[in-house]
Image 1 (tube, rainbow, N blue to C red):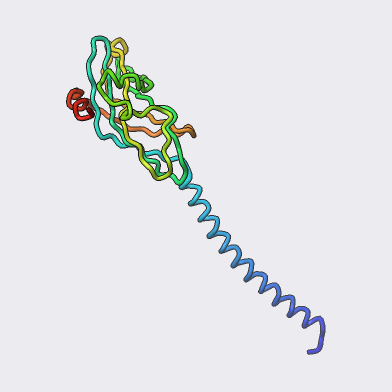
Image 2 (cartoon, one colour):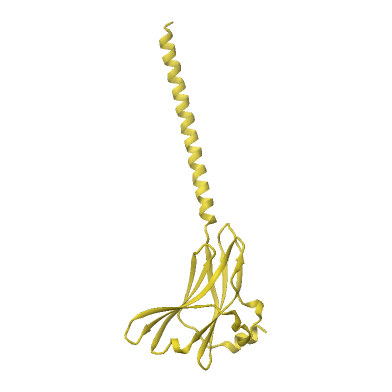
Length: 185
């Protein structure tokens, strides 16, 4: 048993076993760290969620004014901003073709509808992480765009600074502007 090659082999085997155990433990720790980093990265992705509180329209002579009271929550761990707000109107033409029309929000309608300027969301709107902003988004839909068309749905589109779009679909809008305007004054 005093063979030096034998003891060198035993020492090499023990060293290899210790190295394998250490490597296995490092791999487990690295895997857990990777899962944690991926979860953190997922929470940092833009994630705006939109809720509708109220909607209305007001008929004018050659257009329809539309208002939506919304709250927008940033569920992400990173700050974000609303860069653009649009209204997509899905409709069917007289020959049965399904189409969509997009209209940008128009904060200038605030006076015409009797709202306070501070109650209107005007892009860009900063939303810190895990925070919510609320307000009205306003649109003007020209009647000429609606001739011979059957309105299907209204879809609010909120685009953030990363290009991600959050949608909120509304099928029915009531004409209740007088009640809403009085409650905001």
